Image 1: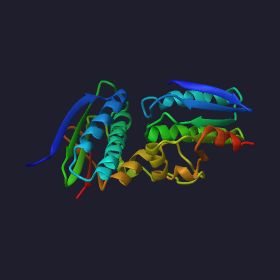
Image 2: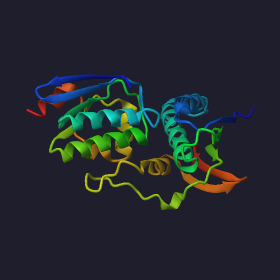
Image 3: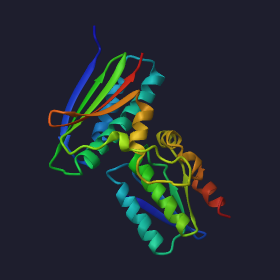
Amino acid sequence: MKNDIDIDITLPSHTRYLRMIGRIGEKVAQEIDCPEDIRKTLSSQLAVVLTEGLVNAIEHANSSDPDKEIHVRINASKEKLVVRIYDNGVGFDLNAVPTPSFTSCGLEEKGRGIFILRSLMDTVKYTRSDGGNVLEMKKKLA
Amino acid sequence: MDIKTEHTEGITVLFIREDRLDANNSEELKAEFHRLFESGTKDLVIDLKEIHFIDSSGLGVLVSGYKSASTQHGSLKLSNLQSQVKSMFELTRLHRVFDIFTTVDDALQSYR
């Protein structure tokens, strides 16, 4: 029996939904067929990945326009985790986001979101899709 | 944002009474920092005991407070980091930038 989970959510482009999506991510990760300690870490990480991906869509891609929508797709299996976040805004240049400073010299308030995504997921891609954009992040689990 | 403020030995202690510090509420903390620094505060301890989730926006606002305190020739220190928050600080290497303490008392002690 296949134990893949595939969740598709559409929501308004607003940060008030971050808590909800984070919780959904935690619950999905808790159902993945893997050792408990890995599941616990994955649960926490997926909540962060979803939050950071959503904030990028809300603030940068959709320019904080609450009339825009965001579509989130989570696919989880024993082998891999795939998160896709679709926005219908102007988008942003993923490759133009620099690595943040790690010392108190040149310390910036912003710019850690993409770094966090790249640290927690194996691949992070941002491409045009159907009149909008998709942030696709994958992580191999087994 | 629910924040309890105490003043001890010239240090302002902010107890953040929320379970998340994220893009949805971090601007409110930033506004509070701005208000405090404008009114002459220079040394702060931020107690994060109740924060169980932080994102890059939350980290960013703490960085902004850290920088503002430095500008005032003071400092901003942190206490009671929970596990997810600790992980995020380590992931972004901010644990090497901030002075982080187990308790508020330890943080206050460091000013003496």
